[in-house]
Amino acid sequence: MGLELPFPSLDYACSELLYKETGIASLPALNDTDSLFGEKITECCTLLDGNHEQRAYALAMFYNIILVEEKKIGDVSMHQIHSAVAKCLLDEDVFISGQAARVLAVVALLHGGLAEEEGTLLMQWIHASLSSYAEQEQPALLGALVLGHVLRVPQLRSLFAERSDSLSLLVTGLAPSRNVQLQYHALFALWLLTFDPLIVAQLQE
Image (cartoon, one colour):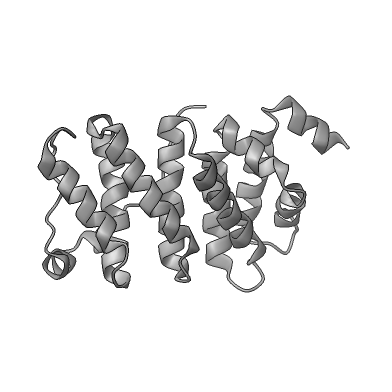
């Protein structure tokens, strides 16, 4: 399975208006050893405690720099980023928590996993999103999309399968009354789970 990251970029979050509001310009292509790079990352982490626009801006910036500058980000800065982003999974703002999930999905794909606490938080967010379909369709669709990416990572496949309601959530997503996109992502997620023999045994029970 090749690395595929189809999440759309949040162009509006990087608009000129937000640059003016936050006072932070586009992150430069600097090596992590350069103190300015670290300072910019710290500033963006601070913005995650700000208003909606500032949090959206910071998450968009993290998503973009991880994709573009991932090899230049040292372990300390990378840990700083996804530790700060993971906290946003608990945000009551559905948009913010969803964008935090997509950032962590990229981190997991590029690094082959997440820290245990962050992986657990991401799985909790995915389960909550999938369970919310009756009330909110879009968060459920985003949750299914993120799941289809993180299940490519063995560690996160195991975390997902550990919960007793995981398979039932996916099967429910296949119901004829569900959105066709949700059906597609649920079916794709079930296929990804078949890459683990232990999970296959669960599916056969």
